[in-house]
Length: 313
Length: 245
Image 1 (cartoon, each protein chain N blue to C red):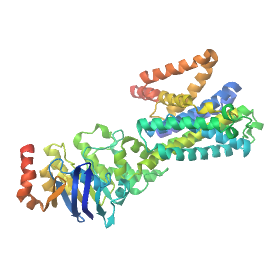
Image 2: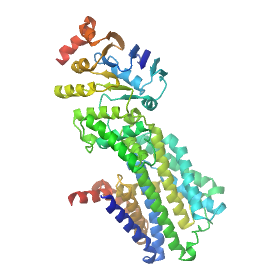
Image 3: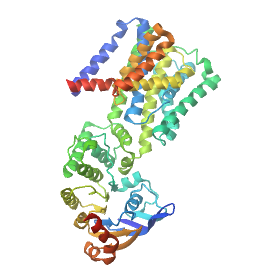
Image 4: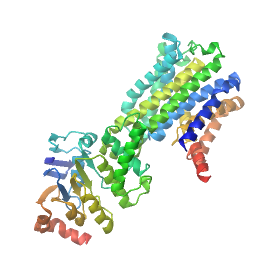
């Protein structure tokens, strides 16, 4: 697509998203804020899985790290939303370095198993360290994040939506820029051919670690939004089911793309809210069916569908 | 430029490379020939750094590099092609070469690059693509065999190496392709170490020839001497004639 058309399209989408507080009722607006957070996390996972070729089954651990870091900061340090976000991102980076340092030394199936184990350890850590995290009951009593006085002018839910939209837009923009940067291209090179990358002078494990750190930091930002929205976080936020949900978003959106998983993330959260009100637990059936459909019918995801239409036209 | 001292590579009971000492001078084009299983590719891997020799030392540009990992040796100026084309098949030819160009420019892992820098990378890449007669936009995975071999060389050259290791670059090429390939190689002024079965290419390109058999150096000299040597004839050229001609 022509860069100018692309710029106009992005601006138009942002403009439409920005007026949502005047269109949607508070419940739907709140839902959309959550959808955006999950969309950002799905895009970060797509960067890791699709762009980096590193299939992770423990990405929800980064959600948890970001959410707990933001929640604990809110309780003990500052009510400032940006301060909480920055702490969450820093925590995501540290967690990515600690776990990634080992993880990037494994490949394919073993990477998958390793990240699965890290996800489980994160759940256990959140459950067991009761004094810090509140254990099974979750971290409660978190004060609402202060949104730079914006909530004095508009209702809190609208102010929060704009905050979430800004964070997601910036986080997503950062992901896209990083994907197109020399580092991002090196990440793609490491996915395509490790031996050749080494022969060209690249430190392959270092490049992979950078990919994990980028994905982890962005996901932790999404996690901070999830906590700030609900002023609550529990070990259930980190469970394998959440990691799988993020993977379904990536598959549904198309793993070669970042925008596809972002859209799929928003769509799936909205769909889950609608179907779980109507169907209760049977929502999982819908999720499973979607998963099957996208594996069989949409191997390239929404992005693939878009490309096919573009090619046909 | 390159000095190997008693380099040995053992796999279990097999001495794939057995005490090879070898010196390649700056600007030299050294060919390494020998029958299958002579240890040529293994020796290459120890020089490039993807294998660490069991014993012996490797010096490059006056520096002991025996324990350096492959990417560090690449940064010192050793580039290699692979015996079986090893490309980024999902990326375009241009991007394949651009990865090499950015690595040489030392910007391979920057998180930002200006449009001007991107343009410079593109132009640099184009220079090597033109040299090897490749088109920028073609997916590396869809290249013909000969084109893939040339992309291998283009990527290695784009690192502007001081020493270029070519592992059977003409393998699988037609006679016309390999003749053309030899021409392309002859204009390079890099120090060259080439493993090749196609003796037409070897004698067209090389200034020195080393013959390897069963992991050991059995002869060393100018192409004309090697061609005249009886022992070489017996262990290598003789069998080659039967097999290849």
